Structures are given as C-alpha cells and as structure tokens.
Length: 215
Image 1 (cartoon, one colour):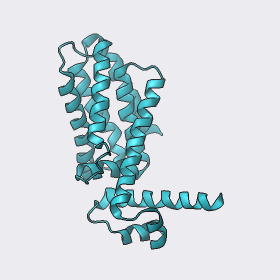
Image 2 (cartoon, rainbow, N blue to C red; image 1 turned 180 degrees about the vertical axis):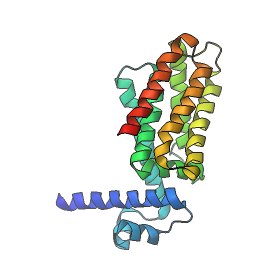
Image 3 (cartoon, rainbow, N blue to C red; image 1 turned 90 degrees about the vertical axis):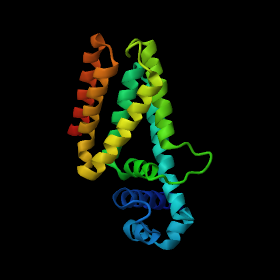
C-alpha cells in the first residue's frame, strides 16, 4: 500500500512539474530531462509512468477534461439555472488555473495544436458542447434574448474564454485572470441576456470574481 502511494505521489509530482514547464516554456521547448530535474525524480521513475513526453501532455489534457466534466456535473446537481451553471463553471475553472498549473498547461497544449489520440475529445470541442447545451437551456428558461443564435453565441463565448486566457498569459499574472473573466462576462451578459434579468447575472459575476480574489 505504501509503495502504491509513493508511486501515485511520484506520478502526480511529474505531472505537476511537466504542466508548470509546458505552461511557462511551451511543449516543444521542454525536454524530458527538464521535467526530471524540475520534478526531482529519476529518469527511471519518469519512464515507469510515461513512455514519452507526448504521453505526459495527454495525461495533463485528460486531467483538464475530467476537471471540466466534474465541475459541470457538480453544477447540474445543485439546481442552478443553465446560465448560472455555465457562469459558475467558467469561474471554477479560473480558480483551478490560479491554484495550479495543470489547467493552464492544458489550455496551452490545446492552443498549440498538440496531436491527440483519435478517441480523445478536443478541449475546445468539449467546451463548445457544454456551452451550447447550457445556452440552449438558458433559452428555455428565458434567460437569453429570444432571437439569439445559440450556436453562434456558444462559439463566441468559447473564443472569448480561450482568447482572454491566452492573451492574459502573455501580458499579466495568472491572478489577474478572474478579473478578466468577469469583464468578459459583463460584456456578454449585456449582449445576450434580457434587460429584466441582467442585474441578477451581473451581480453573480461580481460575486464570483470577488470570491476568487479573496481566497
């Protein structure tokens, strides 16, 4: 049991180190030797868990995918409106990005066009599917303008989310991300939510941004 625990801890340390380096340097500019040194493990320990650098990258992206699935399911279980669930999911992901490198690396790997196994869902496609589903739900709940093109709105939302994070990565510290996310939502809400319902969601965005900032 202790041996298994050590193996799990070593694997987690390798993934965290790789994610930090991929996020800061990029996939191509990070070698396995860099990861071994940064994680403070042996090459044998790394190869025990991962046969190649690409396997490590895929493990990071899989963790990112599971995080999104877990958060989406958690929001479903709490009975939020579709739009509130979507907003809360984006802020939960932002919090994870502030707290650790795996979500940040997952985004960078996806944006850099890392090749994925055929059965592996692309992170952007996964975000698009979730956003589309939530926005269709928001239409049914009258939380979106009735003439909104849901597919176009979902695509614009995902592009805004990804673009906000990528630009922020190059220009400012990650702790600024929740503020930028809140700014993005304030603009989007004014464009897609009917006037009588805007105040509720604008207030929610401000609250969620403040909660991350004060943690």
